[in-house]
Length: 116
Image 1: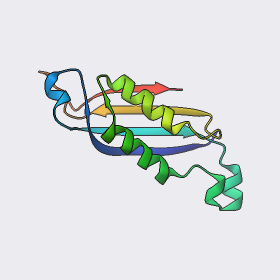
Image 2: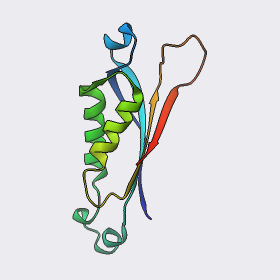
Image 3: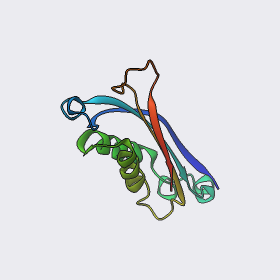
Image 4: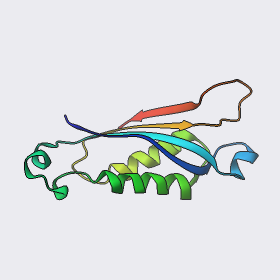
């Protein structure tokens, strides 16, 4: 199966369990992998024959910036839902990284990865 990959999409949003996470936007980074048959688009060179990755980026950014969820697991699920709206999408992998998690440890990020 062919893939459309979106890597490192960054957006700010209000997601988290702690009171301070519910008050202020924080940075998130998302990777999306869509399993799609790209043979038709490869032959036709027509945007109508593929998934428009610009539209996917806009939809993901909108979910992060306008919705509010306590868990990044739920945020990942919502992103998968909006990315899977086209019947041509056969599978989705979403990874959501919280870049500034409120933890006492020194770390790069925390993340969840879901496959649908």
